[in-house]
Image (spheres, helix red, strand yellow):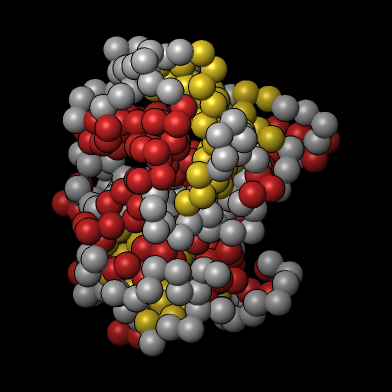
Length: 336
């Protein structure tokens, strides 16, 4: 039995982790930390079926766990990961702290010095694209929710070298409100968000752009530029990303779909939809799946749609998928 500790259990991703781990046949939550609610019971802070005492970070018993999930804000998570590794405990970090490979890239996109640069680079935890690096890893960087949808949607094109990277890849994404976390912000209030649809941090300002470009460049073996327009969608959960990619003009849709079918053959959590069928949230919410749709708008212009549940494949489910790989378990264990 894998003994698990969760830091940040009262956040949306942390609570989702606890929900799924309760059903996992080979993992058990040993303790949970919530610095803001230490001393209380989980059910008193997040009303629901789950209940356990909430600890302060200093009360964490490192000897009682094999792995910890750090569902903490960036800038905080890496320090916790450092402490865990010093105690011989493995880490899956759900923050942004370990996703970028260098401290300089982190400073560029997050505007601060990296809190634990000695942990970099950490294996990037997108199993469908980086599985071999995750086996028996001591730490894994759980990808961001937007990058998960984008990277799975674009990987076959870049690996095959058929995306024309001289032109930017245009990405429009819409995320459910849970993607912004539990913190109170005016634009997330019901009156502001309901019956509304708004863009934010468009262009090259969103922090996930650096993560996307890093991983796309690794797939392509060449630099890739992303122009990104995220949107706040007034639903609880889910991400739909629409990507506009220049490809070789002589390619037909059947050839492109064959690339996707080959890339994701045998992948339990990726579904390539029939030609011309766009992805939709209804294919994926409350699952660890990604649905991908392919449409050739005109010769040389491919539109890729990619849908995930931001709290599951974009966070907690992918983190559990990562510990399954890390500990040599069946990848689908606890996720079906």
